[in-house]
Length: 560
Image 1 (cartoon, rainbow, N blue to C red):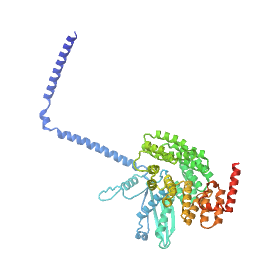
Image 2: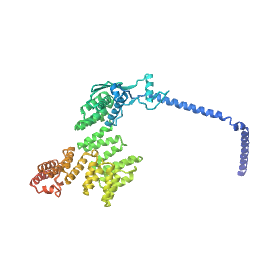
Image 3: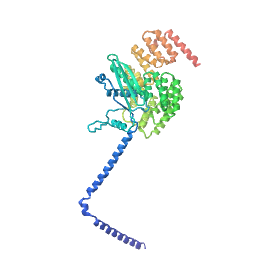
Image 4: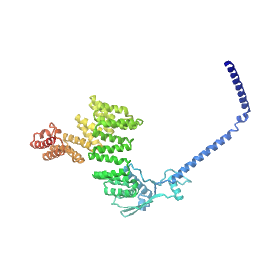
């Protein structure tokens, strides 16, 4: 039965195949082969394709023009127009366009000086050509075209224009901005100082523009120039005119109070900024460092943790938190922080690399070279040399007892970043160990000390001052140690270096006075090395023994 059904099925299939084949052949025979082979149809097809392309192109142009015209109705910022200037200034090269550009440049300088991450609230554009659209020989620009179209359509253009007058040595400038009061400045030029007077005039005008449009940035500039009264007045204006930016106002106010050593007032302003905008990270960061100055360690760490929680992808803030944890709690909490961070950033090699360098530095400072190397091997993937790769090479060379090679690697690390704390400390410490005083002095002269935390800066510079004394450069030692003391007058050990300097300069009374002051501020007599000058001499002097006995007795009473 199966064979019979199979046979019938096969025969049926064959019959169907023959029928389909016959029909297909008939269809092929019916095609207009003569017409097709003559290609008479091709021009019509090409014409149709061209028509489609043209229509698509037209549609694209319409879309582009729609986008362009829609942008016309958005805020175009301010258009700064050529100033009106007297002929005598034009003859000196200060035509109206030059004056307008100089004010614009000065405004940009002030914004850069402020250095704020706050969104720029002022767009200022000149009417200089940007993209040339020459029409019948007339040069236009997109900005000019936009300006004219908005005028024709009755849309307000925000403009800034001004005039400058000169009578004898008196320069007066006035600026008018759409929506704001007139800005006026007067400057007098001493003979031969016209350029300086005009530069001050431009700065006045730029400050006036910021006063109306971005008082926060102006306050930052005034603060940097120690014009605190004006800065606070500007902050108050921001609070009055733009409540939406009040959190920025209190942030700037807090920074000023902190610089004026009013830490409690600064804390109050930072807390006000947080109250107004709880997710604002900057006041949390500033609070952290004020708490640290007040030795409120846990409050400082808590504030810095909050800033990290608000911006967890910010590796710089993660590193700042790690340094604070390391400073007060050692590596234990740092390791757990970075382990979690590396897992969180496992798909971001750049972030891992930034974190790994800082983590390795802390481990490196603890003397665990092997773990520091492993951290960099596991997580550091950014190509090129870096400070810590050279520092680790230096430690490796030292372990191999090649001190010359080690010092060269430390020098390479310093040359990459003269403001890197680890590079400075490694060079000074290692060179001291090798008694290479010239290398220490060289590092001191080239280092960018502004980037170093103040107490670390005090410690390193104090060691350099001691080396100046060993080299009998006592005037250099005196000048340097006074700078160290000025950083923080309540730290004891720099006074002992000052005392040593007075001893070497032959002034024993001053030596004893500053030794007394250093001990009174907490310098521990246990740290005195009696094998080194001048203590190898002083130890036998009755006045020194009495001075030391007084503080040793106080120490014994405190310990009891």
